[in-house]
Amino acid sequence: MKFQSTRDKSAAKFSAAEVIKQGLAADGGLFVPESLPTLTETDIKALCAMDYPERAATVLGKFLTDYTAEELLADCRAAYAESSFVGGAAPLHKMDDTMYSLELWHGPTAAFKDMALQIMPRLLSRALVKTGEERTALILVATSGDTGKAALEGYKDIERIKIMVFYPVDGVSTVQKLQMQTQTGDNVNVTAIKGNFDDAQTGVKKIFGNAETAKKLDGMGYFLSSANSINWGRLAPQIVYYVSAYCDLLTNGALKYGEPMNVTVPTGNFGNIFAAYLAKKMGLPIDKLICASNKNHILTDFLTTGTYDRNRDFYLTMSPSMDILISSNLERLLYFVAGPERTAAYMKQLNENGIYTVDEDIKNAISQSFYGYFADEQQTAETIRRTMDRYHYLIDTHTAVAISAAEQYVEETGDRKPMVIASTASPYKFAADVYASLYEGTSASPLTALDDLSAKSGTEITYPLRGIGERTVRFTDVVEASEMQDAVFAYLAK
Ligand SMILES: *Cc1c(COP(=O)(O)O)cnc(C)c1O
Image (cartoon, rainbow, N blue to C red; front, side):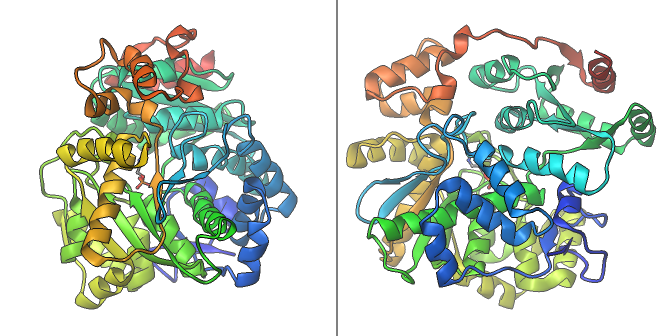
């Protein structure tokens, strides 16, 4: 299986190991497989008899044909071990006869990014060997909170890789900051910068764009790499849990083979929902894909009007991982629906004017699979309350946005097929907002919110967040944004 850019069919094609190492195509496009493998009835029935790591290795094997079955199974067993994913990698929680929550947050950082970031570093480590790379990969990440921690946990103690994470000193939550400052592992570094997330992001991009830095790093035996969500190595593992959810619906008798399910995904960068679309294209019986957005509902607008317009206000919400105006992975959907020429043209318009409108046939083709709904802040809080009342189920703010969207879809269409809702974070990761949505008053501090939520709801704090206030803080450096590059070399010199 070879991979090519979303923007040019005639450009060079690469192996999976090469695209995982490279990240982005040279023309600025994203890598996509040149053809899609299929999931037949025999495949799906066989997958149903497997445990999660085997399901993952089998599905990944259809794309990563330059990795052996043994390599993939060993990596998936290590990535999705019971010790990392306590309670299972992607358990399906039944809310009622047609609503199911696919809990993707049982990993080491209590958010769904673990599903990809626990496996992708292992794939990268092997990619270095497969591509004859002799240097060590230095992963640089600018984070507004969640991605940084998930990347640190994923890359820690992986051979031939070092990771350095920059975060805005006053721009992440107390819990997020503590999660990063207490990170374990011998190949990790965490540094705060004076500035906001954009300053951190700009600083990292500058380092990536500096040819002299690259040369100096090369001389020291390093090359730069990113843990970006547009890397194919992060996307492919996300296909697996939709297949897994379908298997679980077959096993528990909710569906007979061939009957479709619907899927709702709380969406930011469009990676998670695009993985569900790929599963559908490969043959998994999925009917509708419901794209859920928060107050930043650029995708809802795109799906209803065909116009993507990022010239609009940006809001900070209680579902911060969906606060985004550029959904990079949407480019991959455009490629599959509109082909590379039109995709390149739309992306050019987006870069130049911040807006594009897809042709009518493209809009119609997308509407056959996708529906878009959003929940504002009040609807999000109400959904957290209603979900507790109606289903006795505690959810986080992102999952609440999805449940609201799923309910709006059912209300509007009357479609009562089994609905799988991607639950992307533990409620304890956003304990203060969840607590405030459910109960009178607020907690004394962001850390006491975890205990308060546990006491009032009668549920246990998700294991990676337990006792977070008592762990040893390892990383306290704060630098100016202009000193980020010096900080990189200071870390490598240690
Ligand atoms: C990253 C994230 C999302 C958005 O996922 P995309 O793949 O970017 O659409 C939703 N919820 C949580 C909790 C996240 O961390």
